[in-house]
Length: 223
Image (cartoon, rainbow, N blue to C red):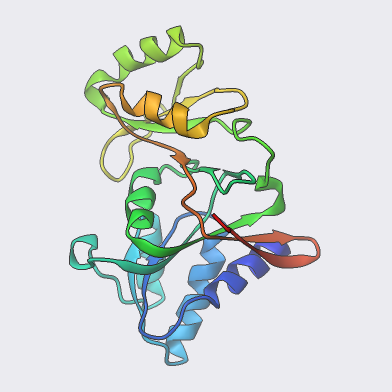
């Protein structure tokens, strides 16, 4: 989709020489990373922290300077995708399975930019299944608990095996229905032993770049 490409390129323009940049994961951010590769070849100097093995492979192929998370006290800007974004700049992320690293990188970022196509903008979160990252050891017990809570949990699969994250955890996707209290649901789930992280990103985005048929536009959070 041309709108995605334009949004990804527009988001790359927020990156300035000398910055430490968090690189997200997904089909829209792919265009941002490709543009950053061009900008580096044109002389810009940045260092990058990757949120997934897939992003690492792409960034390395473009000659981007990657540094471990443990070596950066803070990140200037992170550019990432999202599966849904509401009017309060809450989001659901994790469709690609990188939610844990994405949240850890966003947490230490001075600015978080999400790049999405306009279909991802919603009034209320919850149409997209909510991913949660869980400990494999107790995933069956968690599935039963979540089933009893009415979430219709489904273990994400890769072929005939459970999908595993870069941290070798499992992902369970929940059917929540529309979420009236994203923060409350996030806190409820995080209290359950075995749930490492949820795909609810609460008011973490500062900027959302939206791609559509008529190009890309920038939305700024005022929260």
